[in-house]
Image 1 (tube, helix red, strand yellow):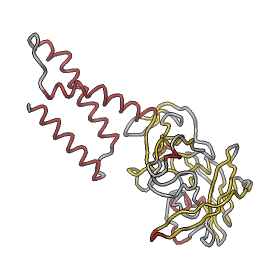
Image 2 (tube, rainbow, N blue to C red):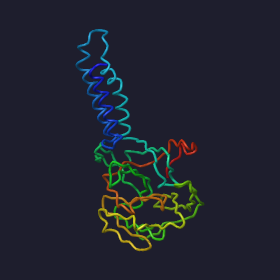
Image 3 (cartoon, rainbow, N blue to C red):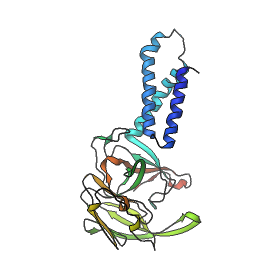
Image 4 (tube, rainbow, N blue to C red):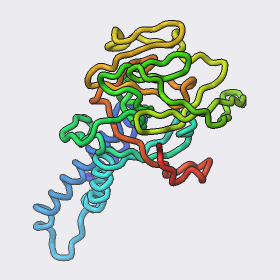
Length: 290
């Protein structure tokens, strides 16, 4: 193995280690891999190829880089600007999304953003009420969350006695059966499923009998908290400019904007639109996310 091969292997191991430890992100690792292999590809094309004798092979390190660069570049472009895969880790979006669902997220529908920095450079669309959105958790931007957009800038969001109201209008509510799921300790819980209409979009949501709609003890301090008022029945929050109010469809089992506040526009990742795999339930493959 030549020196370049050893360096590339060391960089790969170091990068993967940093990703697993949470020090670096996968987008950053992909960016670095694209830059390194691309530089070697260009170096080989402009300089090394002219120095090699006829029929002389590339060194292993250069050969690996030249071969991998187009693949890494394609993955980087697709993941950064078009579509990114995610795995649902919890049940906060039941019954719409289940733990173990592998989903696809549209990266450009809310604007083109620079990789890693996540800074928007081209406006496309703004998030709309009722859409399912992936975003960087305001308390820890290294962690991705997925919730439903309930309030857009300027909206007054109220949630009292487990009924949601936007700008003074209580959303239409129609019960639609039940949904049973397993919790810790192999206990099963049955929630009441209903259809809720946010703007022109109708979606499923769920509440669990016996659990309060707002747990005051979980409330944290967050920016623009002065926009919110709380009482025994629930809360009301005015969404500040450049921010969004997010809630999980599993209303009594979701850690969301009720407790940690608003999501700034700069934290947006993309719009969830498709379930492409669930190894525990193949029937969910190919499901559109509403």
